[in-house]
Amino acid sequence: MTLTDHIRRSVGDEMQQSLAVLTRPSVRTFELFERKGGVNEALMYVLLASIVSAAVAGLMAFIPWHADISPWVQFVNRLVGIPIQFAIFTGVVYWVGKQFFGGTGRYAEVAYTFALFFVPLSLLSSALGWIPVLGFFVSLLISLALIYYGYLAVQSSMNIRQGANPAITLLVAALVTTALNFLVFGNWWQGF
Image 1 (spheres, one colour):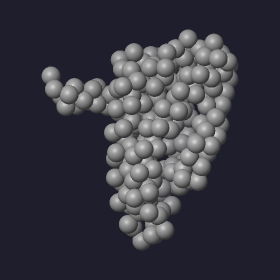
Image 2: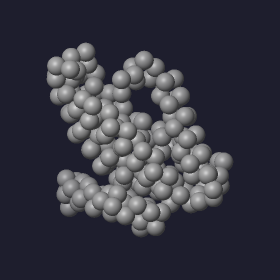
Image 3: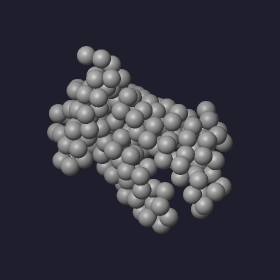
Image 4: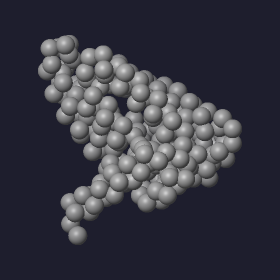
């Protein structure tokens, strides 16, 4: 089997698993798939989303109402930024869950379960987020969906189910990731 065949099969499997997670959201559904892939599969899947997002963002920068946006900056921000931000965020989720809430999952499980919902929602956001007015509402709904699916994914991948602990894990991870992005990337990251 060639590398291309392996990638095609892996992405096909991930798309089917994503569809299951999105249409039957539950901790149990996430648990069905949390060990079906690892960090490599998760990052490859996220890279696919970043390529599509980068292409869409680069092209949308040519639309008149986006004239103040550099196509090149948008392209590079998405292509490089999405995988880096995903890796940082899932790493912080793993660390916070393990250190503060006794999570027993592995980083590979966190990365893979998060990729299963992040990629399709990211693609949907890329496809519709650039449309004036509609883009705002799409972004809002996708943000809420990311929180909901993230909450379920923390429960599954880190085995943290006590009270508000999964939500606190997500909140702390979001705050730490935002701070790290600002410290590491500074103004370059703005507009991402």
